[in-house]
Structures are given as C-alpha cells and as structure tokens.
Image (cartoon, rainbow over all chains, first blue to last red; front, side):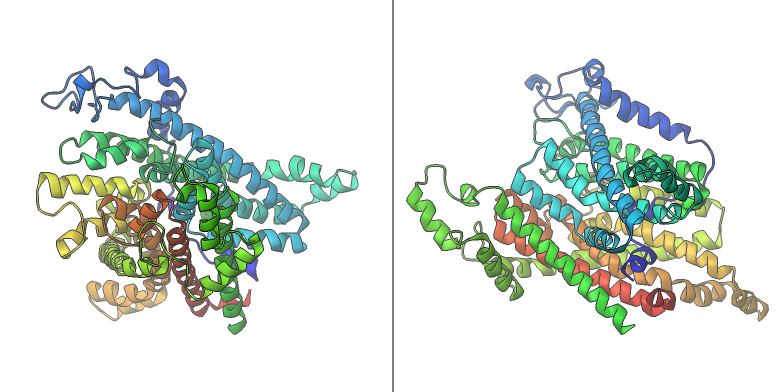
Amino acid sequence: MAQATSQSVPSITPESTTRLMTPSRRFPGLPLFILVFLLVLPGIFAPFLAPHDPIRGSLRARLKPPAWVQGGSLTHPLGTDKVGRDILSRIIYGARISLAVSLVAIVVSGVIGITLGLIAGYFGGKLDALIMRLVDISLGLPVILLALVFVAVIGPSFGTVIIVTAVLLWARYARQVRGETLSIRERDFIARARVAGASHFRIMFRYIFPNVINSLTVLATLQIGAIILLESALSFLGAGIPRPTPTWGAMIADGRELIVVAWWIAMFPGLAIMLTVLSLNLLGDWLRDYLDPKLRNV
Amino acid sequence: MQRYIMIRILQALLALWVTSLIVFSLARITGNPMDAMLPMEADAEEYARMEKHWGLDKPLHTQYLVFIKNAVRGDFGKSWKWQGYTAMGLVLERLPATLELGGAALAISVVLALPIGVLSAVMKDTPIDSVGKIIALLGQSLPSFWLGIVLMWIFAVMLGWLPTSGRGGLERLILPAISLGWFQVAVIMRLVRSSMLDVLDSEFVKLTRIKGLSEWKVVWKHCLRNAALVPLTYFAINAGVLITGSVVIESVFAWPGTGLLAVDAVRARDFQVVQAVVIVFSAVFLCANLVVDILYAYLDPRIRYQ
C-alpha cells in the first residue's frame, strides 16, 4: 500500500521537472563545455586561474564595475565588491566549493541511498516496509527549513552542509534502486548466483548493483544541480560554508545589500549558478535518453 | 477509499512526529542550549537557575514528554530573542504575510502558466512552443533568490517603477510574488502542456470539431476543462512548496513573514521560535500533500486499489 502510493503519486521535485518536453537526442556539447569551463576546471585549478586573491581585497579598488562599463578596467574584468575583492577570482574559487560540496554530497547520499535501496529491494518484507516508510517521511520533510535548523545547531561548516544534503537527499536513490532491484531480483542470473553459493552481500553489490548504474548516473547528474541550488540557497541565508570562503550563494547575499550601487556583485555569481544548473539539467536529460529511453519518469 | 485516507493521515502524522523528534533532539544533543543563551561570563549558579527555569535539569525523556505535551496544544514556550512573545504567537502573527505572498505567487503562476501551457500544446513545435520550453527550462535552473535580486535591480533600481522591499500595498507584493512563483510557472506549464496534448489527441475533441465548433471553443472550453484536472491536483503540493520557498524570498525582499522569522530566529539561536516555525511549516506542507494524495485517489481510482 505505502509503496504503491509512494510510486504512483508523482512528486513535485526538481528532478521530476527537469525533463525537457521532447527529448533531444543531440549531444549536449555546449552544456558539457560550460560545465567543464565553469565548474570543473576552475574548481580544480582555482589557485592557478584566479587573477587575484579571493579573500583579501585591495581597499583602493572597492566597488569597481566590470571592464566594459565606464570606470572599469581589465585588472578586474567582472569588477570588485565592497572590500575590493575581485569578483572573477571569487567566482573561480566559488566553483571549488560548489564542485566539492556536490561531489561529496552525491557520494555520501548515494552510498546511503543505494545500500538501503538494495537491502529493501533484495530482502523485501518488514525491512523493505521500514525503509520505504523512512523514504516517504524523508521526502515529506521541508528541506531548507530543516537544513537551517541543522546549521543553527551544529554551526555552519563544510561538514554540516554535506550532512544536511546527504541526510535530506538519500531517499531518492533508495527509491530508485529499490524499484529496479525488485525486478532484477527475479531474473535468472540472480537465482543462478544464489545456487552457486554467492552471499547476499555479493549478490547485491556484484550482480544487482551493476544493473542499476545507468539510471543512477542520470539521477546523480540531476541531483548535482539540485545540490548546487540548495547549497547556494543555504550560503545565501548565511547557513552554508562560513565566510570568508567564497561561495556563489554568499556572493549573491553580499550583492543583495549593494544592488542599488553595484549590480555586478550579485549578477555574475547568479549567472554562474544558473548556467551550471541549466547545463546539468540538459546533460541529465540527454543521458537519460542515451542510456535508457525507458527511464523517462526517474 | 476510507482505508486509504486513514493510512495517508497516519503517515502524515508519523512524518510530523519524526520532524518534531528531529527538531527536539537537534536542540539537545549538541551540548547545553544554555551556552548559546547565557553570556560567556555566566557562573554555575546562573546556569542552574536558567536550567531550572527552562526545565533542562530534568532527564531527557521527561523533557521530551513535556515538549510533546505542550506542542500538541500549540505551546512552544517563550521566545528568547523577542522578549514578551510566545514562539507560537510570533509564528501566527507573521503567518498572514507569508500566506499573502504565497497566494499571490500561486495566482501569478497559474495566470501565466495556463495560457502558455495551452498555447505550447496547441502550437506544438512552433516558435511559441520553443518559448514555452525555454521558460520551463529556466524555471528549474534559476535560483529564486537571485531572480528576486535581478528583478529588484531592473524594476526598482533602474526603472524605479516599484519599491525594493518591505510589505504593504500591491506594488510591494509584485516582485517577491513573481520570484516565488517563477519555478511554479515552469512546473504547471509543463503539466498543462502534456495533459493538453493528451486531450487534443482524444476522440471527443475530434467530435467537437466535426460538430463545427470554433477552434477557440474546442481548445479553451472543451480541452482545457479536461486537461486542467491533472495540474489542479498539483496546486496543493505547490502551496506547500511555496511556503517553504518563502524562507529564501522573504529574506531577499525583507518581507516580514514566517520565513524571515525563521531565518532571524536561526541566526539568534532562538530555538523555541525555530521549533514552532518548523512544526507549523511541516504541518502545512504535510496537509497540502495529504490533500493532493486524497484528491488523486479520488480522481484516479487505480491508486486507491493498488
């Protein structure tokens, strides 16, 4: 009963809405390009790419506009903020946080979700019912509010952000993996493995898991976008990675106060978030069509 | 059907209980909440007095029972930050502002999404449809708080048409409502479009055309009425999502609602108020989900017999 409802009632969540209306089968070259040059490369090579120190600004260069606006110069291509920190350098370093948070959070929530999903689907029975009830509850929690509470209690830090996202986002993996495990479990090669004496653990991770990797890849791609949005919202509210570490969300918060005099402070980090998430969504859509057309409703 | 509704209600109550448990334990497991409340130089005697005052000297399970007993009656204690107010009183005082904002956002999203969705479906694979697709894609990729700031910059700072923040009057409501409703536009639009496409394909639409009705009447009267059922059931969920989303948007526009209260309370480590906000928001959120589940089962008998 509960499982039926949790599957048949569509959920309004970012990833259920990410599918384009008509699946485009064109290779997502531009999105991939954007991801590499906006997220991956800056994230890894920030110290080599950033023209200035992201944390210490120069007070003589406060509130400089971008290069193409009157008063701007190429020293600070995207301008500076109220303490003279270079916006471009901060965006480059901010990519590092977005990249690190999303990768670690994906892995942590993935490991929890996949393990519980495999257990639920493979063993079934009471264990399955218990885990799926946890999934239902977890999907019904108001994420951002609980995240705020977590942060208020534990204090803002990288670890807190990871814990918050992992605790709140594991359920989607569990549901996905469980659903697929249920059908894979009945296939012949599983029965054969069992006869051959494979342990439960081995069957789950060596025989079933490889068969759910495709759909997990799609889910993870879409989830990274959701995590980047969540992390930036937390940082914006001052509940993410603590200052002065540059994060895209906190930069937008800085810009919010100064929107009347310096629009560029909030504009560029926001564009970075938007382009990154947009690209991830397009990539996820394409992956879904490419890996398995049956996965339309992930 | 009754059995189904009962199970859903029980599940919602269970979720609410888990939420309360999370909130309660979070506030206690991480050390003494007094640390956050009392000044650094407070001595042991002062600690003891405050602990007695807040009931923190009793064992944990007793504390929890007291917490639950009071919570059921809507009593979450007094605010630490806002002297002289109860936590629940503060939440209820701010709730109308949040509901006003959420309602406006919902209205805007429906008004925008319905026509765009219908037009996208009717004119499938035309430039209008492409515009619809772009709106949908942007809707799910834009951080709402950033959209709010950009709108503020364009319409309040550059054009000077609208005020930047605060509450009062229609002109202060427009920008936050659009920022909050934008994501919903994308969701509702997609739903309207896909269910319109299904309906446009059906037999009875061919019949209405054969009968010689005008295309306008076919689309906007006969098709939309049937296609609107599915998106309608989503409105309740949307209502829940909007309330949560308001946490961010209210901070952007300094909108004095419950979301802003939550953020302020978290910053001040005012746990009584945080608890009250989380429980009230969760209750609203779960109620909305419950309504949707029941509506769904009512509209689609397959669900309740599964």
